[in-house]
Length: 488
Length: 85
Image 1 (spheres, rainbow over the protein chains, first blue to last red):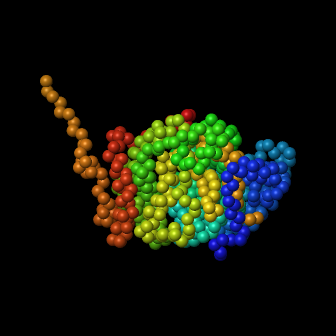
Image 2: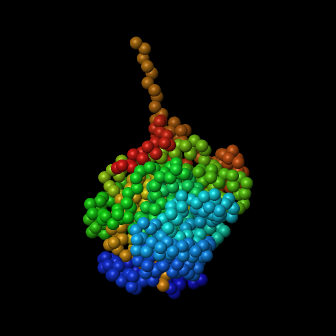
Image 3: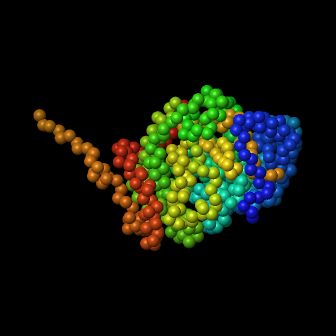
């Protein structure tokens, strides 16, 4: 495979023209664009108005998964027959409803695919690993909720082994390749979700975020990723890594698309005791409400002018204890990962790839006192964060220090420099996981090499609606999220 | 009237140092890993000690100031206090 594919379109940013470009695209959308260029909401509108059937849309996405998704090693298995049967059934339901389709499920007939770490009844999730998991007895809550909403499941997507790597390397399945430049990483661990959404194979995909695994692929692949706060979305039936860090959320093209997926999957679940009982806001309405009057504390200068144009006040903010929070997060994540994998590490350690095995071994070397002190510190650190952010709606910060690095330079396996490479990539991620905060990662421009750059807006617990309000307004005033790496 | 002795405060740097964890040596790593049921090689123990040392050092700076009554459930109380903000 050549490192620069001829079909790759690497648009350069055009500062100051973002709004005009966005408006033009909106006018031309349904005429000029292929179905895979639609946003998820536009695809749903096309399904509702019967401009396309679920089967036609599914076939279109299946073809893209076969050709494009597999080219970037983002797909583990395509389930074409099952997906087409479900699409036909969805078309039948819509036809039967006729014009009275108001009560139909919100996502009826929408093709999706997900990181392969969610249980499906009677099936075995791979977790990107060699170990064979038991057959699932029930669907993961997030998949059950998406299915209830009418969404289709097209494919199992690539992920880092046991979701324990931030680059998208996998010792068994190989690395996922960045659709903007296949010599570069996608970010992980939701690497296949990043590929599938960025290369326009599906309209959204679920990922998990324990130390940046939704936000890093969003940043490196030029798409939008929403990491909900801890307890907002059920983790029941999802592969565990670190029970006090794990969160599940969508990767999508736009904040509005991510908002609608969050609406479908969020909320209290008796199967997950950490989920809160707070009522769900209308996330899509929040996303469309406009950001005027909001206050954003910033550690990043690039977006400030745009935010000010939108009527958002900005201020500098100093967040307390980030180095200590990063350290505490590493202790907790390492120990909880080692605990989740303890039996497999004792019985079949040889089945792990070298890097994951080495990182799991690290977790056995912290004492119980260290772990519990880090957990005691979690409340202290959250209280300090809440005090520091009293006057702001959100904090704007980088996702990573650079655009996507090369696959070769980050293929460090279990070498002595592995931990420092991983820490460097995840430095701005982990404090947010340790504090259980929601964070919205979205594209904010391109590097001189044409690689996407993202930023994250994070906020206090249960502030996903405020983040989406900001993200929606930013994307209405820019077109970074509409750029595509792959020609039709 | 009897005088009540004032409690002494651990403010000296030596005391604080003693409160902090010792550096994770390979021997300590091996002991903890074996207690957890895995047996790393000597080379692996050295690698692990090097890998976790920065986090141990960075966290030691705040652990000495943890409030006496702090507990993990404080996090849930603070998080859920945000539900209706």
